[in-house]
Length: 254
Image 1 (cartoon, helix red, strand yellow):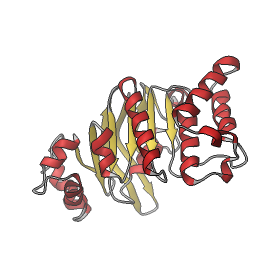
Image 2: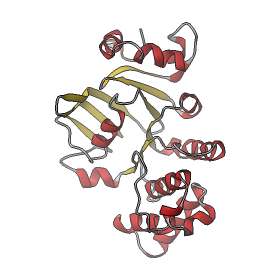
Image 3: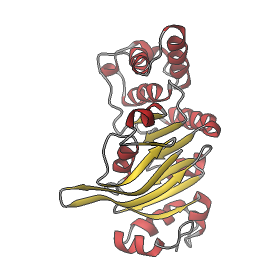
Image 4: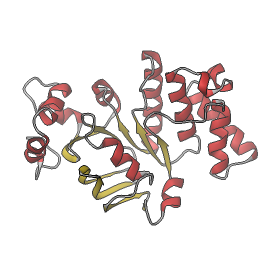
C-alpha cells in the first residue's frame, strides 16, 4: 500500500533524502526512526504528495504520488508535523470540513465525524475553538480529521507528541485497533512506542536507510539488548558510517 523507490530530495546544498526505498503492506505498523534532520518528515511529505521528489517515485495504494496525486491522497490519512489546523474552527467543524472536501455529506458525514471524534477521545473539547485548546487536544483534533474518512493508509508524523501518558495510551490503542485493516507509517522519538505498537522499524541516518527490520531484531543487534542502544549504534556515529554498516544487509543490522 506504500511504495517508495529511490526517493531523493534536495534543499539547496543539503540532500535531505538520499535514495530511500521501502514498501509497506496492509497490517503493518512501520516506524520511521532517526535523529532530528535525518529526513523522516521530508520522506513522509513526499509520500503524501505535499513535496515532489527530485528523483525516484512514491505510490499510495498503487497510485503515483505525483502523476495521480488526487487518487493517492484519497486513499490516505495524514497527520503532519505540528498538526496544523484552523484555530477558529472547533475540532468537530474541522473534522467535518475534511470530510466535505472528500465528498462526504448528510448522515454519512455526521456519523464519520462523530466516530472519529469519539475514537480520539475529544470529549467536550470537540466544541471549543482549536486555538484555545492545549497542544495535546490540538494533536488529537488533527488526528480525528486524518482518520475520519477511514482511509486504507495512514501516515502519522509523531502522533503522540504533546499528549499526556493517558492520552498516549489512548492513541496507541487506537493505532492497534486500526492496524489489521490499514497500512500505518509513523515517525516517533519514543522508543517504547515503537516496541509497543510497531511491527517494523526503519532507521534513517542522513537521508538514507541504515536498518529495516523488526524492533525485536534491532534489540538483538547490540550488546545491551535495548532499542535505545540500537538507535545510538546506528545514528551516533557519522551518518556515512551508519549507512555503510547497513548497506547490503536489508532486514538485519551489522
